Structures are given as structure tokens and as C-alpha cells.
Amino acid sequence: MTIQEIQEEIVDEFSMFDDWMQRYEYMIELGKSLPLIDEKYKTDDNIIKGCQSKVWVHAEMKDDKIEFTADSDAIITKGIIAILIRVFSGQHPKDIIDANTEFIDEIGLKEHLSPTRANGLVSMIKQLKMYAIAYQTQLN
Image 1: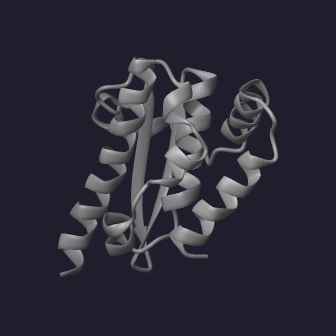
Image 2 (image 1 turned 90 degrees about the vertical axis):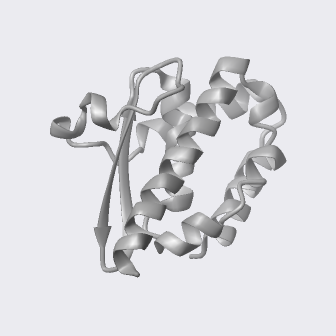
């Protein structure tokens, strides 16, 4: 699936819920299904700066596509990174770099997060795109 198709799928999933409590519960469920980072990558180097809670992300290149794994010490944050990894993992670096993230506004995520969590969300997206830029330069 393309990034756009995955984003549309997520928007559809979130539109099934009537209120934000249900959406938060769904995000917590998504966090539980997150491809977990290997303990050896839970280092300060892999912590996303700018997040209120700890979020570790690891990226690996496999067949010209980036595979992400992550974890967080907070359940909502774990759900947020799970959504982002679902969108970007298994995609070509160039597609990640070029991807827009308007789907986050479409599901209303940013407006329902505290300012510090919203900043953390932006930091997560930036970090995933930085990995993509790094891998793209290796491919060039």
C-alpha cells in the first residue's frame, strides 16, 4: 500500500468512532500492536527529542525500504507513534520525505492533544523524516 492509501485507511478507521474517548482507546490498542523496538536500541541516541514522554525509534533499511520499530513509556504516545510507523514503515525513503501528514488533522489528532504532546507528535514526524533523508542520501 502507498502512504496515501494507508493514511486514508486510518482516517476511515477513526471516522467510525463517535467521540474522542473511543478514539483514545483505539490509539491505545494500536500502541499495543506496535512492532516493538529491540531492547538494545532503547538508548539515548534513539530517543526522540521534544517529547514529554520517552519515545525510542529505530530505523533499518531493507530492500530500499525503511522498517521502523519503536516503543514509548506512555500509552497514548505509544499509540501515536504506532500510527506514524504504520504509515511510514515499509516505504521508500523518498516517499516518506515527500509524504504530507494532513491525515493527522483529518482525524483531529493534533487538536485533541495537549500542547506538549502535539509538539511531541511534530518531533516524531520530523525524526522519521530525518531517518528517510539519511537513507535517501545513501541510495543516491
